[in-house]
Image (tube, rainbow, N blue to C red; front, top):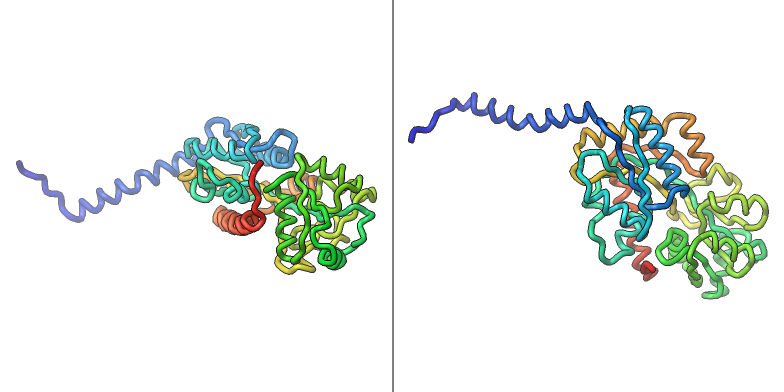
Length: 328
């Protein structure tokens, strides 16, 4: 049987043309995206902070892209149900995840997950960062972080540190503080953070690390005393309150939200979404609405967001292991 001979130069041209077909089709596809509604799956109930931030950005993107982006709330298992739904979805840009710091924590907190967050998710863009605040009952003797640390060292294991449960962000913010300050606080887990605030105001517990948006009105009314915010810098909401990092250099614990997609989502779609999200985060009205919710717009490239997620996952893995936290 005779084999057709193809000149080497012509063969190379044909091979190069075949190799570029997938790239060309992906570019053409991204130019028509989205051609139908896009779902943003969030692992928390409607009305919570992740849902509210997600809806703000969904509305912006709907107007910019000419298709509806709809929120799909799937609470449960610390947001793992929502994450797995996105991991299993087609990598076509029509199913996105509203990711939070919980995803970075859950990577270590849960022994058996049906996915690997770092491996199975494509980071698209960050949205916001927001501080927590270390608050005590007004009757507590310490009025500053140095005074609190000194009191805690003089009374090891006698200060009740309340949280919304093992592995919750208030719990781990506190564990990070304990580790860096070298103090022994007794962790008292509750079912929810509102219950924590009720008992903190009532004097049943002494300290918690709370999302600033939850406790700011109590602070302003004098029902709670703020010792410091948990982010590296001071918060515009409480400009007179120092950051823990001013006393414990390197301490930085913040809430964050961002958009992710299934692994292998075409780069062209990831970058298109990243550009549009960052345009939204630069909009003055969007910044104001985010600030009103107690957060700060936080724009990054997709690569920067991926690096940030890696760093957060590594940081919280150490704290989860040291604390011995297990999900309830």
